[in-house]
Length: 211
Ligand code: 2DT
Image (cartoon, rainbow, N blue to C red):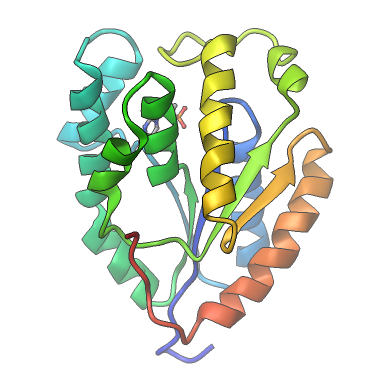
């Protein structure tokens, strides 16, 4: 690929324990094996000051009003925007585990207004593709023990899934809904097929913003 080509901005979304982390890793390995420059990222990015506050909140060592933590998650994306833009323009494809849509889905699932939740995301870079990993509702309840973090509860995850479904319907032109109940290998094969074509297709396209 020529030096002027930009990388693709790829995001994985879905509920907790749906397999995003595995799929991100498999996609990064595949792109590397094809000599496509690629970098993994994950939101929340917990190492910054803001990220540390988010981590304290998620691990229940700190309480904050729903609105405040929502804006912190968004600020955590904004503080990385220049770096993301630069990496993409240098030709790196980014494979990102969660983004603005998790921000909206988790906060709206708590009862905050959907449009209010989306507002601070406007102007952030827009992904070229979102892989939405989705499992049937019973599958979610059968996933057994969640971890100890704040949102890891079956009933809450069900509400999060409903908001993700709503976003998926609205953003259908760049969202790919995939069945997460199939094997990790089969799921990866579907992701890989779409992602490799995408990397080539967007290489000469301008970056877009969420609006
Ligand atoms: P991980 O388990 O993937 O680290 O996520 N979350 C995430 C939000 O509520 N808002 C956001 O903007 C983002 C990116 C989802 C930790 C939890 O944080 C939630 C699960």
